[in-house]
Length: 438
Ligand SMILES: *Cc1c(COP(=O)(O)O)cnc(C)c1O
Image (cartoon, rainbow, N blue to C red; front, side):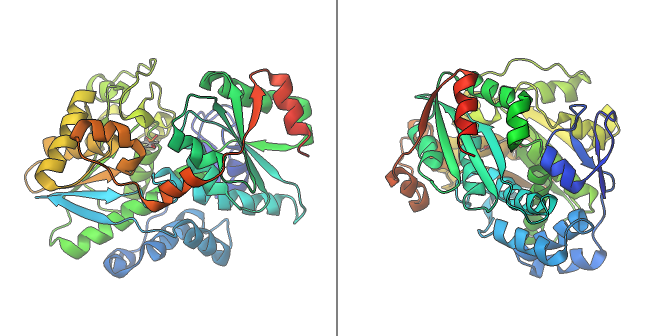
């Protein structure tokens, strides 16, 4: 199947090319030409199926034309080697816990899937040769850990994580500097913007691109975006086991770049009977304003305690517009919005711990509050809990006054030995470093 660019200036490409390129040449985002629906029998059986079985069925509908079934099955099963349980919190409200992967955040799903698909396509493009693909990723904290761990040990792929020295938390740093193998952490003497500039310069440098194959692993890539639809089906399957009536399900998605929500919309397009979505925002509310006014006005992001959602110009907005033929009315029919201040987020964390004995993280709290405030009678709310509260231990403990237990796999990162390469923020040193790794 072909993938077209949301800007419609570039030619449609194969899945392989879309994955290897990331962004289309016209700077649009790739979308599948057709979104297939799943058969009725699948929906009838879903409640009895595992996460891996459900995900493989969804993956076959999305990617089945382009990847051999046994290989696709391996990619899916290998990606989802952890559970995504649905927890009942109170009344008609649930949380889908997306934080049981290696870095305790939902980005593990997309990053692990993309790593495996990229590795496969790179091997194929190269006719089984040994040309390595080099993933460059600049991070202010969270993306680096999900990408580095997602690609850890994946053959034919090397990852270079660039991060600003002294500007990420200890726990975040430990998650991408202690891995070894095919992961190299570059400690840049500069800011996050400097890191991002180094990566951008590398993609534009002809000599470097001739010498080595470079790619990025941000949420624009279809191989990171589309697999996020899997767990919407799994949430529904788990609800079907517990609820008599599943016709009124509302999913609240804590949103930043809107990749997660866009994947939920794809799931609905594939036939999943989700009644509607809530795009839950922190104080960065460009999308909320768009729903309200019909005008999209990107702006500088502001810092909040749900910082993975501090985005002022969400990249996947283009995909949402495209899915709904740019119709504001059609978008508003499926998605409503909300925006919460740090104070409201804190209050929700404290109150949910007190009333329901459930510890939310700041991101999941934004979504959970939405289900408390915006459900209509008879609706069942599912809030996506996108990170483990221990990732934001300091913030959460400060709010509740109660200690947050750190899971062993997070603790283990802290015990690893940090290994980095220190570089200046000048492009010349970075380029020289990359070239001498060949
Ligand atoms: C990245 C992230 C988000 C936002 O997801 P988008 O797909 O960018 O909307 C929400 N919560 C957490 C914990 C994240 O890391």
